[in-house]
Amino acid sequence: MSTQTSRREFLEAASAVAAGAWLSLSTPLAAEDRPAQVIPKKASAVNQSDLPIVDTHQHLWDLTKFKLPWLKGDAVQKINRSFLMSDYLKLIGSHKVVKTVYMEVNVDPSQQAAEAEYALDLCRRDDNPMVGAIIGGSPQSSDFAKYMQPYAENRRVNGVRTVLHDPDRPKGMCLEPTFVDNVKRLGDMDKSFDLCMRPGEILDGAKLADLCPKTRLVVDHCGNMPVQSEDKALREAWMNGMKETAARPHTFCKISGIIVTAKPNAWKPQDLAANIHFCLETFGIDRCFFGGDWPVCTLTAPLAEWIDAPKQIVKDKSFDDQKKWFHVNAVLLYKLQPK
Image (cartoon, rainbow, N blue to C red; front, side, top):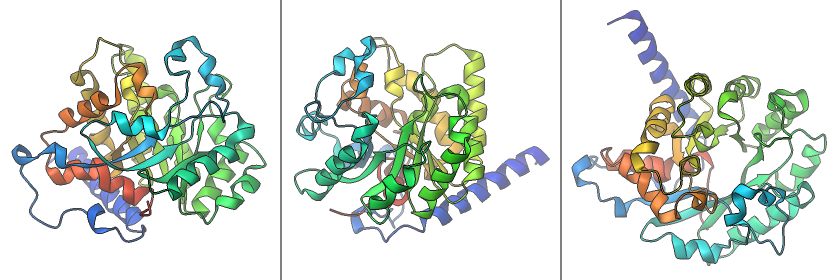
């Protein structure tokens, strides 16, 4: 065995142990959320209709309540309307979505607190599967601590996100002192921070992880690398950044959103496979999980069709591994509470 191989295997093992330590801090799992304690089913025996799914990236927006400035863009006019929970529930098809996590929708900053309350109201109701929320916030602001104070002890607020790839967000913004201090503050509250950033800047995520060792960081959308891109330099920068970020054991990868980077009416599941397999291999099955990114996903594909694609890509994995990716890991990472 070569020295390089031995070192790689050691790092993979150490990362798995560290990830397990992070996830063991979660509250006890309900029976339906626990990994199976039986002999894993063979891949050939997996019935994917049995897979319980936690959709960790559920966007909802009611344009009678909220302003979403980014919906003014020409490329998103197809989704420039309200999308409600009732719409989502009609569109999941035969997929067994048992829990959802609200994902902030980049509202006008003045409406972030109202958006958080909107999501928390859905979490309290028993007519839908939403159990938690990643709320919007502005860690770059000196007012962030005051903003987060009402949510510090709320177990339905699982984390925070601010979109880092907007045109007005400069490269390196997440490494500014105020931003770093506020992401550290999230760790002190036992809440995560979602990284939604440009694919060529993922290395900043690794640097932020080093500066915030107590905060769980989640790379959204497989790092936003376009699935059909032939830009070799961009892909190399993305891969290097993802590897560096994954080397920090308190980082995780959400396999979500990538369908939007494919060409509408000109894609197939195999087009997504390279990015998905790379993320699974780089972060490991215990630190990856699924997110729907509805309704943004509909810019390329209907929700049920998009969920089908990753199912096809991982169909040869064991039932236990598939359940980890689609369900268990998300419950552990976001410390999701039952209804």
